[in-house]
Length: 448
Image (cartoon, rainbow, N blue to C red; front, side, top):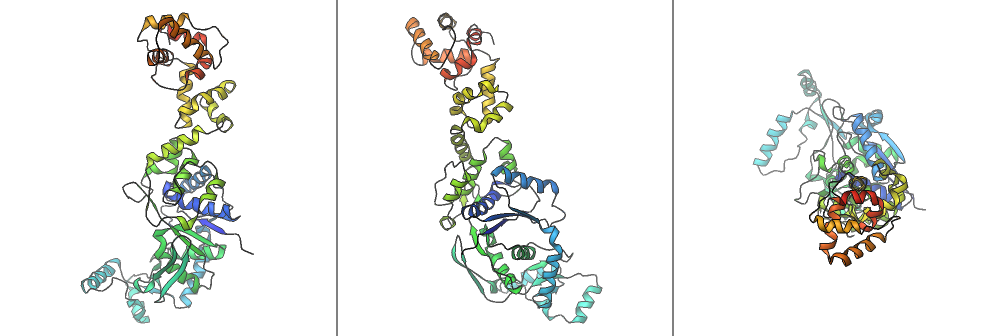
């Protein structure tokens, strides 16, 4: 029997999530959803200086907006004792060793290697230090950083996205796992937590491929099961620029505040750079059915933020009233008139928030534009009595056409300008009953 997957999304709470972060979060959540698995949100908050509770809260809020509700939650900062135990075990095995070089010394060494045509990898000089030499360095006030001793071999795995993949660890420096101040870099805590929490699949960006070669060796050194890995392409701007938390206009919070629908953001974040065409997909189940990690392109996933506008508009145009009822009330639309109003304005909206602008056109005041007062006066005299319905506009304009001879744009544009003050907008057949006869007469007379 196949075990249901347990996946994780492990952001650092050092800034707001952006649409590039949404990609791995969604790919993990949708992978689990399609297979009856579970999703863990783990905050990798070992960066004590930059991690904040405000950013941690924002991560949860952004995921909830995307429709991702974690099944499990953890913080790395709560698990430091487990990381310490693993580090001590690696030290006892001789796989984690102390190094005392300063950054300046390491840089000089790298420059010499490059000058000799050698690869600039760490030469393991620290392994040759005697106990006396180490003691002398510590007496100078130096504190060691700790490197993981890599086996000089190729690590291979079957990648969910890339197929057969490998990393030649002979080409890598032994990675630093613990800084001189005793704090951990990302690598070891991630392995320890993945192992102890039972993560079965690690789906992350292709910028982690080299990390995977290193981490597989750490899993094996700790006698821990190695998860299945998948490395997807990264979202970039249309110019190929990588995304980062400094691009605030692409933050999930910024997109939400700008009025975009989570379905549009999900669709763009997941389908860009895959074999599926980018289209507006409203539901998570439908989107999960479209995700095939093996069909994700190896090329960078370039996206155009303007594409989000089209996706958003298509979702809005298909939204039933029940889905937006509360939002329309918040925009000031009276509940008793909201359903017919929504049916009228929905085809003209790119965002739900724009409905508020059209309600102000309905409720007034507006500034009528009267390019031909004589024509408008004739039209006002022919305005039908109430009650009005969806046929009133047609009946009225037919009567005005017969009386004045105006037709086409010459017939409809002056009436639209007088009633709404605008040259474009929703179908007046739907707007007219919402505005009402008294208000229409006032606008035809030039009053707001």
